[in-house]
Length: 106
Image (cartoon, rainbow, N blue to C red; front, side, top):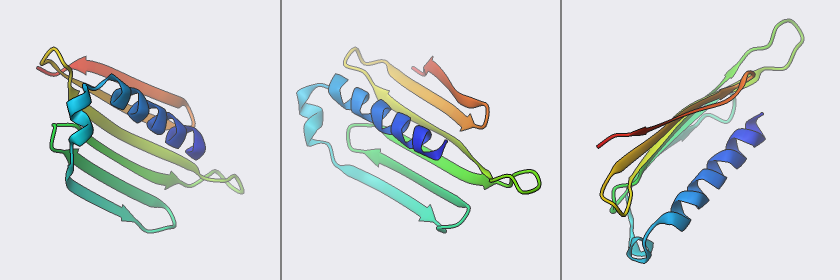
């Protein structure tokens, strides 16, 4: 499950980066926060000079009895499209699957 969430996040970011105008290739990271205790939770967030934001938080939920735990992830990313409109994708991912929500912010 963790691998699927990470792979989906990477694909999402690659897709967004391919859709950006060429001048966005010069964007720089203006904020980066990361925390990982290496055991049962992690989080990260960043913002770029061209207005892309991304945040994600994952926590290991204990399993029932001897069952392995499940990684529950939630996060979002937002960007301004070439048409000037701002979009956001929010998601959760857990034992029930990946659940995205896409919206026009402004």
